Image (cartoon, rainbow, N blue to C red; front, side):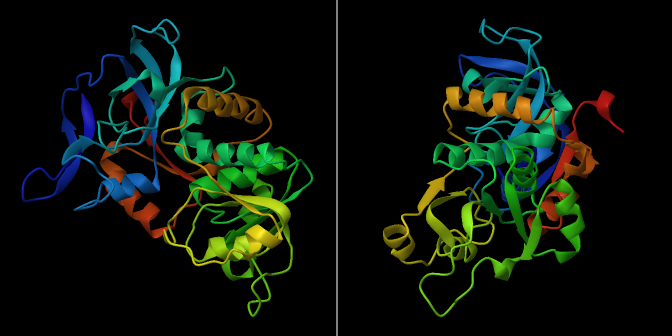
Length: 331
């Protein structure tokens, strides 16, 4: 089969499309014929020399994929089931979705709702899954339609999906981005207003800013997250899932003890299967009311992945880069 292999097993580092074979890693592995994958920020990190994210020296990349089960011993996911495959060590510590076939255990698989095709599943991908998990985390905290919600990194994969899904569920969305030229595109995705990266909070001379947001989805971390915390309204929360701007935050306890705000961590890697099912079920409802196609920045083949990694690493994409793994799906 064809696969995009990353190899740093010797003194050199190389990657590219190879003809390889795969075999199951765990007893409950199912075999999936892959239609599509997508390019995530983590994929770019995995495909870097001396990567701190990659757990093994040689593997097939790709932290997500969508396709059809072709071998199964699990009656809950029989042969012929259309599935999304993501999470765990996929594409990080074991072979991933940049291949025509992928083995994965049941806990990495979710049967797709009838309303979501395998192509749409990877337009959503890990990024869109994380965005919807963030929305659900905020709603579980008490956020309700009509509330004002800030989304940072709004042109990225998670951010653009978050803007789209929040707007579809009736929220008043403010999109924060460093790409001012993308304001019309973000408004078309449902943003009521678009602001710059430095406009999240005011009153920099004080420990707390004006109360502006009923909730927030932060996709970038770094210096932005403290600014969100100090500008949330009383009792509000921010769902955080990103670190492209840095993994460390410099803040005070004032937002937590004087405004009772909450910081909600959102993880898509080790999420329990029942919660995964809830996220995909909700996505199945939302996609009937939104057009996912504008979330596709562009489409690439396995051979074009290196350039795609560069685009994602530089933050120059708008939405998702879709990967056509199966030759029958090539444009």
